[in-house]
Length: 340
View 1: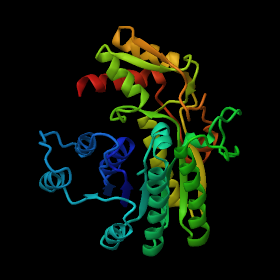
View 2: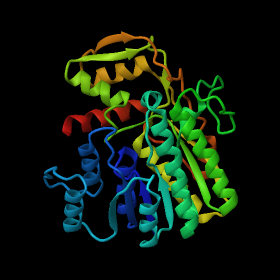
View 3: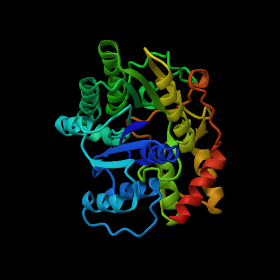
View 4: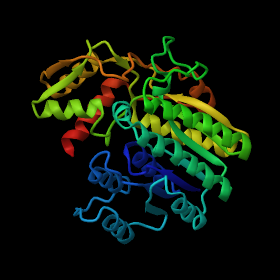
């Protein structure tokens, strides 16, 4: 099969690309290598996903990596340095390639940055997603997996969070864009018969995690004996989901789309295990064998108190079965961090 992955050089995307290639499929990776964080991290993700282990000298972020890939990798992988807001660029890619399924992971992520720059989030997440559906409509690609987020639940008082819960009260621009994308996606499903699964990811972590996210940041600061910013009283809680389990959920969603018609589904992908901030940091400390220096700070705007996924629909519909508990996941992450 021929898969197009947007954001295929990011944290989740690079793991998905790696899995699809291992399974013998062809992959087109669209990524803008934006400056949300150091683009060299995304280049390393790309090399890791292709299992290219030779040393790479960073000069031009596009041309050098494409040259390296063309010299060392087979023709079943293509990388396009492409912004999803550029409709004509997307059309060229679709026009010149056979695409069976789109997995749309590209987005501006992060609750706190979205408060500082809401218009950019609207542009990338909403306009970019609509461009993807426009090219799918034009070139008759009718199988589409889309990344949503647990942030759409806001401060939902009912736990665990179910796909049938009303999510009309987001508390950050990021969450609002993700909810908007779910709604607009249904329009394209209804009007143009694009089969679609929207996956609500719950706080994904693991090797290659973005450096701005809490687990990665805490591990780095602890390793450097620096203060750790500790927001709130430690009782905020998240349903942390290990990257391998997320990839299993995406792969199973692709399979479900390929085997079924007239599909529009919203599905939670979580671990269904709630971990407090206190426990998260304690687990990291245990793996390092030392205590963190905590810098106590008030809760930040846009942060939710708790997330907790009801994954019964995922179990039933796509045979989702998460395997990695938090303690083992942190152990794997810390080992990866110390190796890199």
